[in-house]
Image 1 (spheres, rainbow, N blue to C red):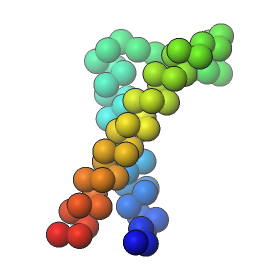
Image 2 (image 1 turned 180 degrees about the vertical axis):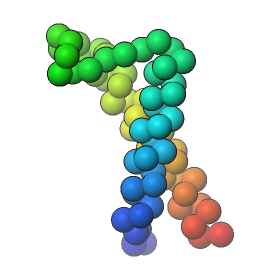
Image 3 (image 1 turned 45 degrees about the vertical axis):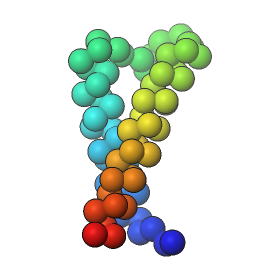
Amino acid sequence: MKHSLSLHIYAFLIAYVVSRIVFMLMDFDYNIFRESFSFVKLLIDFGVFALIYLISGRILMHFRRA
């Protein structure tokens, strides 16, 4: 099944905004370029973003088919 580029862009934007909101609510702030490297914090940052990206992509694909 071919997915359009707009679906991935929307999923990325949703994941970015929602992950920033989640991190703000959890008082989690990690910037790899400003702080010393922490694998755990990087894994949390990437994992939350990836999970939200996958979920939002699935939801968008579901509504696109409907």
